[in-house]
Amino acid sequence: MPSSHPDLTTLQGMPVGQWPAWAIPALRTALRDRRDTQRALAIELCAPLLDDRLASELLELLADDEEELSCRLAATSSLSVGLEPPSLWTRSGSTLSEKTCVQIQLAMKQRYYDGSLPDELRRAVLLASTRSEEGWHQGAVRAAYRAPELEWRRCSLHCMANMEGFDALILEGLQAPEEELRVAAMQSATRRGLLGGAKRVRERLLDERASLDEREEALKYLAQVAPRQLLQSFESLRGASPRLDQAFARLSARIHYNALLELSAEFPDDDSV
Image (cartoon, one colour):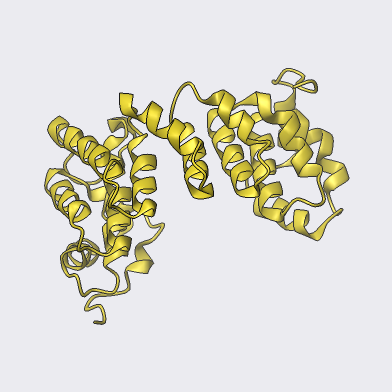
């Protein structure tokens, strides 16, 4: 059934304060209409509006086995906002009560341990729930890291970015034979600022056999965590590969040669890392 409201994709990336007047009523209408073709997007866009009432609706949706997987995944993403510190919330309405936050975390735990759920949803739940670490996460993330399935191992590496005690495994992931795991490890190492991976990441940056995606992640890591390592490679890489030229162009807003020169003076020499 076609949507009976304006195209919700126009709201993506737009601050809530700049939303048109029709936005919030349209989101709430789409959220409750199972026939709406933009329902999953509406659920995801509701995250900045999360309050006790909306959280209750999303929790019911998440628990409903008859709901579309895409909608349950979107609900997981929106509910994860309630697991962040209040200082990071970016909503324009009322805030969540402590009781609701506890309910969200409990629901996440229940969904993760429900073996009848699709693995994709269980992975999403695990990743979202680690925004507010609890005792059960340590075992769950370690089990995911040891799983034979690539997607579980990749999920575990993303989870580790939110948790303490996993830095060694993140650095270990930088040497995984699978590109997907190396990229996930780079992203987590960047978020945690793990300088110990600088040498390995630089090797991937200089490896002409590596994909553009991996080399771009290497650029992001080095620019944020180990700018001196990037400086040592910057000039030799410029123009050496069309793929890297594209990567440099994408990062031009954040990576500037002169700025890196200034930053490098503030960092210790990490050549041996």
